[in-house]
Image (cartoon, rainbow, N blue to C red; front, top):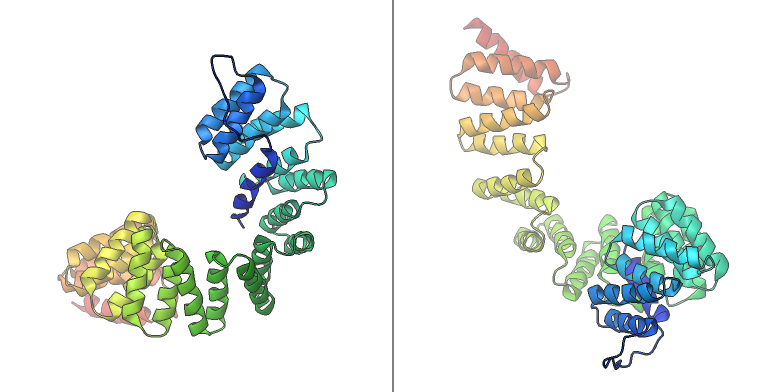
Length: 388
């Protein structure tokens, strides 16, 4: 639903209705109107820094120009400088408390800040001033969605579609609500409508693919993920999802290729490392497994399980000092993590450190649940080590 920001940006076309002709600046001092026109042209040229500067000149000449504050605020908003945007939009409302567009933009700013109740209140005011804007209902629906009120979100999305039956984003959002509610039939029909009106929107293919995957329809899921990466070759999620389908179908080479592609695009994609590790482990490619665990630990240095799992790989390679160091790291992060004590004891046994193994097994028994299969092994070792 965050992609509604793209739709918000389209309001610029409504706000910036002045002539886009080339201004003749000559030697005369530009007027406030001319500076505003220059700002509008800069927005169309995507030169946002210059647009902000031009609108600022307008405001210097005419501090009571509510429209200039709103235009500058929308540029700040789309540059994700929400604090500056909020300041300008509030100034707009101070000068013109009946500006529906200002309430609308302030609602979006509050949405981005996670202040959903304030956002909804502002969308209410915008809609009260102009009830014919589908985007405004959709935006309020997004705020309700993030607030956890999916029924009101659905009501607003339905109204947006009633006002604009070709509104692809609204169909996508409605599909997302139904998907969250696990009403997959309704979700699929809405994603199909979203694709009908926006056939290159990779999000709809991705979400529809996930539903097909949940339903066990792997070929359909694969087709949707393939479309997603065809339309966006930098779609890391699409490659990851297709890799997961290939893995589920036992096509491990194809899965590895897609996971690796996802990681080329987004080297911080932890889940792709984890799934690639599973394949490498199944093939006994322990060096590759170690490289991926190294990457995960670099990304998530507080992830104690990753240290334990990397320690097991060192253990399998008979590199017990490295294994012991990793098990110790896991226990520093979570001192009650029973598996690390058990694994530590095993490495101590391998290098002949029986006293240390005895202490590690005792710690394991202290924290392990009685149902843990390692409990029997640990008790057997304790008897044997105590007897020596």
